[in-house]
Image (cartoon, rainbow, N blue to C red; front, side, top):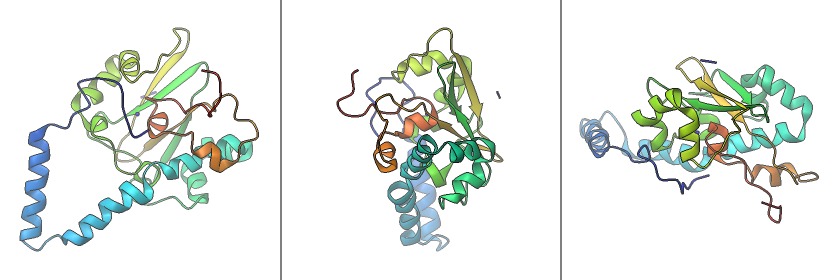
Length: 211
């Protein structure tokens, strides 16, 4: 076929079903009790992806693409190799494709079958990304979903929905905000939100820029 840490939008795909959370916790407890999983190792894995990886890696990739046209071309041509240039690779990110947002095209990413997500550059997927509502509605009514996230796409712009799979993970290259000329890569990376790299958000405007 060819989604910041906080959400002010109010939509029914933002909550994790309580029964699913309980099932996961029960399974985790069972595996720990049987000695199949080391709880310390499990905590370390979760901590690594939530805090040490997170979307910060992806933000650095986007910032480099904004600042370096040659890197951007490599990223759009062979995302897996270009991302690896910055040291980001591994499980759930073996085969990456980057799609670019432009004034004429807005991209958003979903996994319609489960919750395939590029862990090395975005960390763990948010709860709403895994919900059945997001997975189905993003394909059926993407503009409505984007509106609920606060993103209005002009009627004359195309919305493209990319379905991540176990073989391929997608990352959105958001449009570079106006007023960022002369900013360093570190400053640019601070403007990149997780949602903008899924396509359900936009990069933040620099402080002091006109709304």
